[in-house]
Image 1 (cartoon, one colour):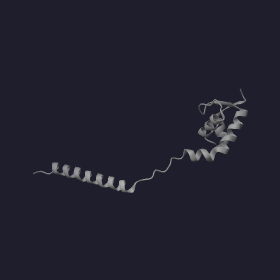
Image 2 (image 1 turned 180 degrees about the horizontal axis):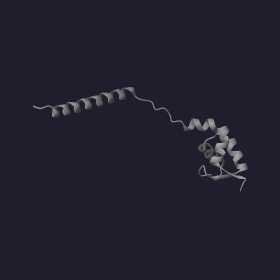
Image 3 (image 1 turned 60 degrees about the horizontal axis):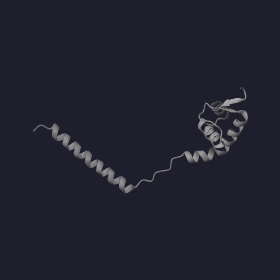
Image 4 (image 1 turned 45 degrees about the vertical axis):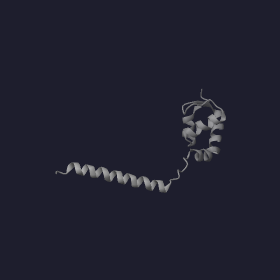
Amino acid sequence: MSDKKRINQIAKETGLTNAELVSAAQTLGFEVKSHSSSVTAEQAEKIIQSAKTGTDQTAKVAEKPVKKVNQKLLSQQRKTRKTIHAHLLEKQLLRTQPF
C-alpha cells in the first residue's frame, strides 16, 4: 500500500490545490471523487504533469465573467430607491409628530 498516495498528500508536496489535482485526475479518466481518493505513484505523476500544464487554462475557466452594468437602468433604480426611502421617512415622521 506504500505505492498509493492520496490527492491531498500530492497537493501538499507539489503546492497545487486539491481541486486542481482532482480535476486533472478526472480529466485523465481516473476514478477520483475527492481529495481523499488514493492513486498509484504512476497515476500521481500523470496527474501532476496534467495539472501543471493545465493550471493556466483552469484558472481562466474558474474566473466569473465580468457583468456589464446598464448605467441608465442603475441610475433609474437609485432614484426609485431614494424616492421610496424619502416617502417612508416622511410617513414615519408624520406618525411621530404630535398634532
